[in-house]
Each structure stands twice: as C-alpha cells, then as structure tokens.
Image (cartoon, rainbow, N blue to C red; front, side, top):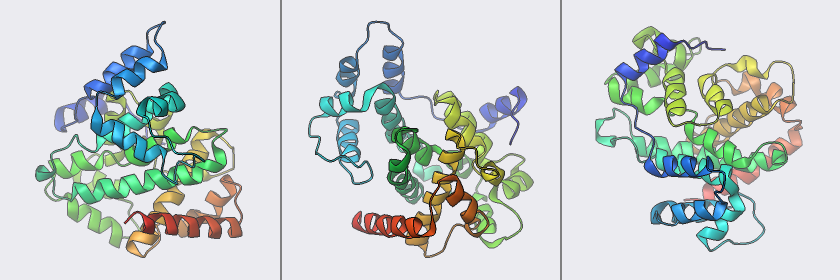
Amino acid sequence: MIEINEQILTDINRNFIIPPKPQILSDLQNLAALDDASIADAADVVVKDLAISSAILKIINSPAYGLSRTVSDIKQAVMFLGWDGVNALVQGLKLKHMFAAENSCISLERFWDTSTEIANVNMMIGQRFKKQIAIESLYTLGLFHDCGVPPMAIKYDSYLKALHLSNQSGKESITEIEERLYNTNHAIVGYYFANSWHLPKEICKLILNHHDLSILDDVTDSDMQISFAILKMSENLVNLVKRGTPLTEWNTIEVKALDVLHMNDDEYVDLQEDVIDYLNSEH
C-alpha cells in the first residue's frame, strides 16, 4: 500500500494542474447535507444540465446497467438512482470535460473512451455483486482509477515515452517508471484529484493502490478487494477486445481475481463473451 503524507499532497497541489470540482457537484453535495433535502431536489439540479441529463439516461438504459425496463424521464432516473448513484454518475460525466486536450502529449479522447469502456464493463461484472457494492461506485472507479494520467500527460512532454516503456517492460510497472522519471506517479496524483472532488474514501484508496496486486492475496470478501478484482478484470477484457492483448499482469493475477470474485473458468468465459458483444455493439 502506498503511504501518503501532507508533504506529498502539497507537492501535487503545487506542481500539477488539478481541475476544480464542478459547480453541479458542489450543489448536489451541499443539498445532500441539508436535513430537509429530498432526491426530488437533486433531480431539479440535474435537469438544468441537458448534457448531464442526456448522458445519465444513456447510461441507465445501457446493457451495462442491467435494467429490465427503459427509463425515459431524467427525474425518474434520478429518483431511481438515489443520492449516491446520481452523485457518482455526475462525477464521472463531468470528469471527461475538465482537461484541455490540446495541452496533453497523449490523446485524451482515446484515454476517456477507454476509461468509459472500463467503467461500463465494471458495471456489467458488478451485477453479480450489486447487493453488496453499488454499481454506480464501480462506474466511478472505472472512470477515475487512472485520473492521475491526464495531469501527468499535461505536465510532462515525455510522458508518452513513459507509457511506451511500461508496455515494453516486463520488469518495471508504470508507477515505478513514473517514480524513476518524475519522482511521483499517476496513482498519487489521482488520489489527490479524487480527494479534491470529495469522492468516497474507499474509491480514493483504490485509486491510490490500483497497481498494488497484493490486494488480491488471501480472499477476504471485502468491498475493496472485490472492487479491485472487478477493475482488473474489466481492464483486461477491454484491453483484449480493443488492443488484442491481455492486461500485462493478468496472467499473474487471473487465478486470484477469479477466486476473489468466486467465479469459475466457465463463468469467466461466458462473461468474456458478453463483454465482447457489448463492446463491439457500442461502435
């Protein structure tokens, strides 16, 4: 587990461009703090943002979400999602528009497309665990797990080289390469970012440690361990479909991830086929 102290957070704040929390998130969070607030009040806030409203309806009616009926009214969708659900989706939807793409050394459009696909696959896998873990939190985790990458790509012109090195190296992880080149890594930057947007502490912790494969050691059935296993499985499946290659570390962790998710090989093959069909149908 990565340890964070105040000096590290101060350095991130000083050296990186971290976008401020969007006003709609502040409005929703302030509303939720009121004793007499209702979810209908949240719907009134969301409905004012047409782009967010449209995107929420698209997500909630997608196969990834798994509803048996179509929701056509944004207020009805917000009522269905509840406070935590609508907050999670708004966070993710706003995230993609907070960085200036022209200042980045990588394609942020492609980056967010991949993050969105991972978020949607997270929800598909999460259907098995929705009594334990809210699938909206898995959506947020999928979108935000690499949210430290854009600030790194904006600050460092050589960052694309670091990503290429991580794809070629079988010995160094991306965070180790980042530490060697920049004395920080995208997991720490992402943790600071997620905290500044007041994401749930559990998600912030996962963002900080999403490259720590030891989380899968010894099955504990904790929400954190299950969410981590789902994330790694989603990353692998998206990589497999979109790039034709598995996640670099998947061979190392596949058995552990399946154990954590109490999934046998046949169930994983069935899931893989469903994800391939879903991802191919999106384009």
